Amino acid sequence: MIVKRADFITSMKDYGAYPTKGCPEVAFAGKSNVGKSSMINKLTNRAKLARTSATPGKTRLINVYQINGEINFVDLPGYGFAKVSKEEKLSWGKMMQDYFAKTEDLCHVFHLVDIRHEPTDNDLEMNQFLRQAGIPFTVVATKADKISRGARLKHLAPICRALAVQPWQVIPFSAEDGTGRQELLDMIQKVCYAEHEIAEEGDATPVEK
Image 1 (cartoon, one colour):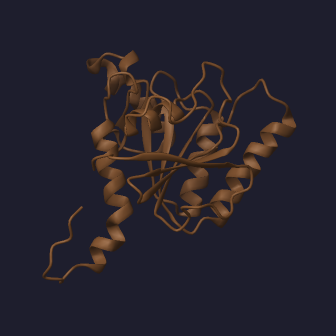
Image 2 (cartoon, rainbow, N blue to C red):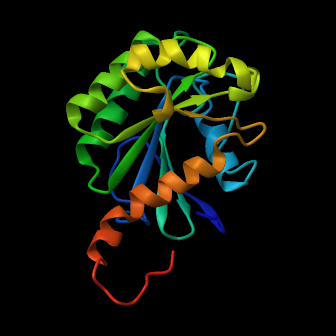
């Protein structure tokens, strides 16, 4: 997948109608400051498309971006940030619950965790929720540039144990040096067009992607 265009569509507290609704969606979920916004910026090669901050908890709404006029990226509120009120934590949780309950266009969730640390209780809860809800997901280990390539497998081991995934199922990613970028883009194309490709099987006319 080659990103030719990326547009900010909307921010919303309550998931509902928005201008590009109906296109395939991929969602990005993870704890505060894990790098969701930075990932979106790197994937789209737009440094300021998604707002980033050194302060955890910057993403407090559901933000939607459209890629190539075809796919929606949904940036969900970060979870697990201790320095916010209980009411705000509940608000973030409700936003995500409403999103997963109401979306009809979700194809895949990218569950981001920090490669440098073992998954938190909130990470485990998100993992369990996705499994119980039957939502397809991929674990992405962010900030891979902070760990040498040779040491990454060692750091992935506790993540894999905690989240019940295999090392080859986890995508190491870096918003700094681009590690994992093309792998993620290729997966996004695959999951978003899977149904379309199945529908086209047996058609003599090749479908251009």
